[in-house]
Length: 144
Image (cartoon, rainbow, N blue to C red):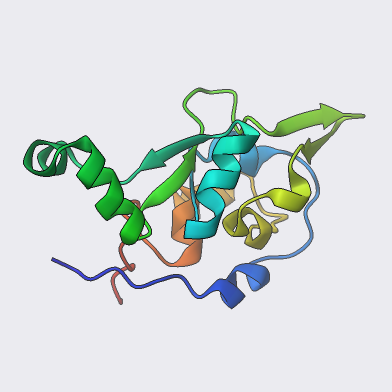
C-alpha cells in the first residue's frame, strides 16, 4: 500500500494565475481536498463532507472507524453531490462568487486559474485533487 504524503500547503497559493470568475472550477469539480482543521467549519457552513473510503474498509472496520482512519490519512473532501456545482457558488452581474470566500478550503484558495475550460479539464481530468499532487484516492501522483 502506498503511504499518503501530506500536501505542501505553501504550494496551494502558487498553482495558477488570476481568476476570471467564470465559475467553471466550482461547477466542474466534484471533490475538494479538506485539511483537518477545515472539516468542521465546512460542515457548520452547510457544505457536504465525504470520506475517501472503500466498501471493503467499511465492511472490515465499520463505517465510524473507516471514517476516522480516512480523517487521520487526510482523505476527507468537500463534495458536490449534484450537477449544480459547489453549494457556495453564487452568480451576480454575470460573474461567479464564493459565498464563503474568506472561509473557503485551502485547496480552493490555491485554485486560482484562468484556464478552467475544456483544455484545462483535458489536462487534469474531472477532479481538482490532481492539482495538488494527489490522486483521487488522496495518494501521491506517480513519478513519471
